[in-house]
Image (cartoon, rainbow, N blue to C red):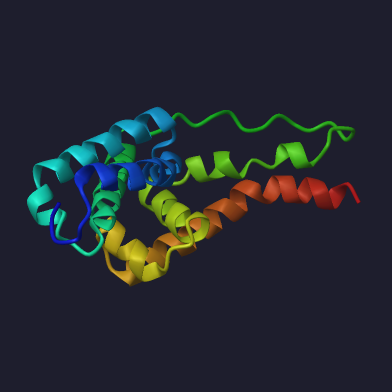
Length: 164
């Protein structure tokens, strides 16, 4: 045990699942998220004498995993799926709205900002620290992402309005 009283094993048990959940939407698959999370824990293990003494060693691990996830997503773009087929008027509208797919289509940094800020409920400051940029940059990413998501989801919303 180190200064925080937390062993590496304790940190692994406490943080692993949450880190995988956080970065899965950024990289697009649970398998890749698990591999990146394991890499972050390996990095932490090799530095545990220092990191174990931090007030929140899990935050260090999460930040490393998030930054690696954004880099991974930059290097391995996800294939863009075909646009949804034209919906028959008798089809349920709820099935045509696919927010997950729209988020996957965002550029990696925008995707990371959306996932961390809106889905994980992090502050803009926390997101900036995690991905390694300024708060203003996070706000720009969020603004652009909201615009892209609105455009991507607009056809489904238009269909809902036309069906009234």
